[in-house]
Length: 150
Image (cartoon, rainbow, N blue to C red; front, top):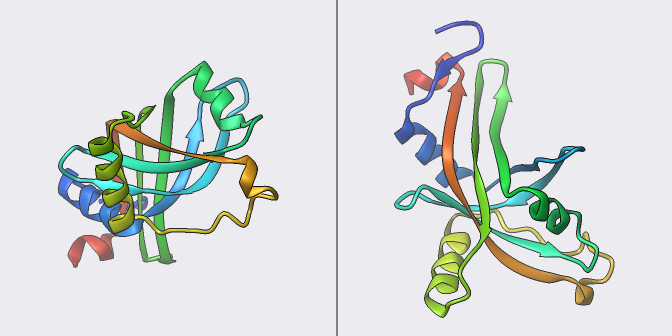
């Protein structure tokens, strides 16, 4: 334990990701790009499911064309002595366009994501929702000592 909290094990990280449902997804590139997202965590496959909405000139789509490497930061902060944070990295790829794969993605997202609306987009009709999965290659987590004791 140190002043920066204590590490979280894989089980703690998995439980935390299942319970959160939202975070900040960051794309690599010459200019990093992060955006708030909803996600569902699939504990069995160790992956996160997203429904990304993209327009014709989507910056997300352009960045994925450069590199599918992303990171997801998820955190919870109550006060200085009560917090948790997890960062996962991996590859973001479209969910296979098969009924069984899409159905599974929808079920995971519906159960675990913190769903938001599309009202942030001016012309919703000009956007396309696409299912993506983040295959996690690395995950780290830290929490306040108070949370470790619970």
